[in-house]
Structures are given as structure tokens and as C-alpha cells.
Image (tube, rainbow, N blue to C red; front, side):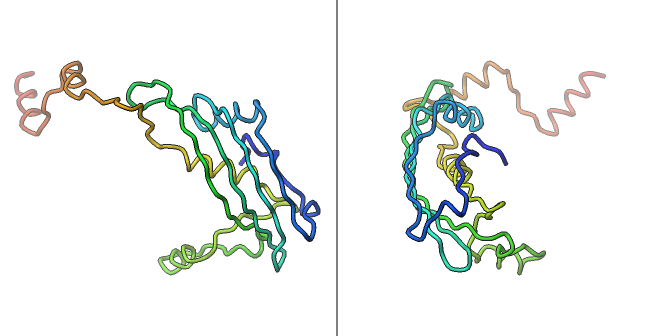
Length: 178
């Protein structure tokens, strides 16, 4: 999956024995692309600090944090709602052949849920941008609401002239139309 942060990758050879420490800020273009992909009004800040270190068995560990300032549309009024997000991150990257493949049935589901979920190492690269992008997407408020915004259900019902619809109401309408 290509995302706004797809260019944030590291080759395995970039990671020394002491690890790799990175601090970066998304460019205005990357923030605009992330906002469009995540259905945000804007992404005003996306800063990340992380460290990658090699583990045993050709695996890598990504730890760090990100800070984002985003603006979403209120689900009631569609007015802008600003949000400040700070998230910690601790993920592992494994060679694809080491990642368990899911089988079928309840036993396989339980096994998959108990297993460590790892990101695949693809073509000798660690796609850290995708991980940060996905974490940002899950950290967003799913139903942003401006303080004090309320749905006026009575006004909505009155405007739409909603009448109770039950089996007898439908039969009465059919009889009336005859």
C-alpha cells in the first residue's frame, strides 16, 4: 500500500550495530497528502523520533514516538475540530518467511491473536513511514465533535416528515392506494 509517507524507508544496511536514530518532520507535501488520504481538513504537524536496532534472527525493532496536529470536520456541524496527538510506537520487522501464515478455523484465529504481529521486511527495506501513517490513522478521533455541538433530532424528524413505518402503516397505505 502506497501512503503519504511511503518514502520513509531504510535499507537494512543503513542500520549499524549501534542502531539507527532518526528525527524527521513531514514536509508540507507529505502532510497535505496524509490529510487527503485520511480525510482530514489539514495535518499541520507530523514530527517523529525513532530508533531502529537489529535483533536476533534478522529481525529489527522500531521504537519511537510521533506528535501530530490535525484538523478534522465535526460530525455534527462540519466545523473544524483541532486535535493534538502524541503516540508511542514499538514495532518489530521480520523477514517475510518468519511471519506466521494464518490457517483456517478457530484454532488458527486463536493462534494468530496470540502471536506477535510483525511488519514484513520487504526487499531489504524497513517501511517505517507506513507504520507511522497507520498509527496516525488509528489515533484519529473516529467521530470528532466540536464542544457543545448537539444533533437536534426533533428538527431533523420534522424537516424530513418521518412517519412511523410498521407493518400496519404499510398495509394502510396499500389499502388507501387501491
